[in-house]
Length: 124
Image (cartoon, rainbow, N blue to C red):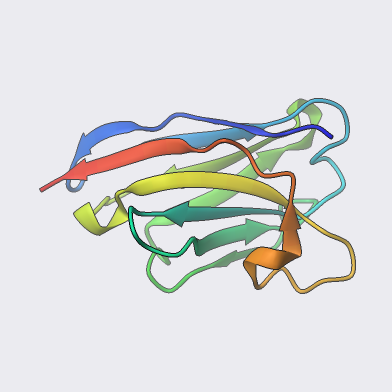
C-alpha cells in the first residue's frame, strides 16, 4: 500500500496562513475523493474537509468553513489545503487520506491510506 505524505505545517501567529500539501505516487489520489482530518492532543480525530476526484466539489466542516480552501492537481497527485485566518483552536496534527469506494466520506472509517500527518501550531 502507498501512504500519502503531508507537508507544509509549521508555527504561525493567529490570523496567519499556511498551505498544506498531500501527495502520493501513482494513481493513489487521481481518481479518488480525498479528505483532511486533524487531531489535537487528547482529542478525537476530527473531519476538516474533503474534495471530489475532479476538485469540483468540496465539503468543509463548520469550524473551518470560510477560512480553509481545498484544491487538487491530479497530474501531480497532490491535494492542497489553504488555511487562512488561523486560530489557536486550529492547532493539531493534520492528516490526509483517501476515501474508499461506495461510502459517504462522512466518517473516519470511510477513509484509508492515511499519511503520517503534519503539525500545525497557531499561537495566540
